[in-house]
Length: 218
Ligand SMILES: Nc1ncnc2c1ncn2[C@@H]1O[C@H](COP(=O)(O)OP(=O)(O)OP(=O)(O)O)[C@@H](O)[C@H]1O
Ligand SMILES: Nc1ccn([C@@H]2O[C@H](COP(=O)(O)O)[C@@H](O)[C@H]2O)c(=O)n1
Image (tube, rainbow, N blue to C red; front, side, top):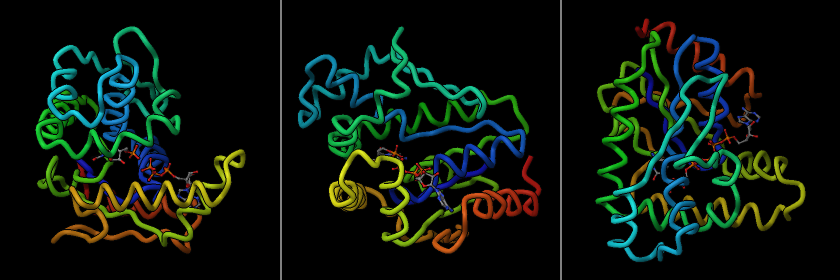
């Protein structure tokens, strides 16, 4: 079991997915669950600032995620929301949902069930509190980081249709909100920091794969 945390745009999802593919592991994107719950709330007119209403929406939240790195999908009920959960309207409200403690408890249980259900030699789960809360006993725990400037530039390159300034503001405001709930800027004891500021994508994936292989995770 491999746990990866880090701030927005640090490469957690793309690097973890590529590393899982190379290792023959499963890959779990935990942020997708918070995003899917936010999408579900918006879709059903649930007030995302109303903690009780958001919590109640979890009762019939039929969430499915693909953990095969070559077959990644996110579904809510019969709807494929893989793309929809990346839309700015969802990104704009997801932190409000993620700061509700009871929601976090329920999703932590869900993440652990997905980890237990994996039948591959390993699973990489990435997010904000994986190294500290979801899987503090993971065989390998990584804080994947990069300078704010590098993260903003990478995120901005993905969405040239949006102004670089707007992308940068959204990224830093989300980090500020999220870091009030969990600390993903500083490595906890036993967590290895991989700083990709001066690494390209392939070098970053290799750094993760090499660390896992040296740690002989099974
Ligand atoms: N070392 C790197 N060099 C260059 N680009 C990178 C590197 N690592 C990741 N990227 C790119 O940076 C962008 C952001 O990566 P990614 O979406 O994986 O980040 P994330 O941490 O999952 O973000 P978020 O938490 O906002 O979902 C992607 O376009 C990815 O390809
Ligand atoms: N372990 C996690 C993962 C995510 N969050 C919250 O979800 C948001 C979206 O996550 P992405 O990784 O897809 O960007 C994120 O901004 C957090 O609010 C979380 O709290 N814990």
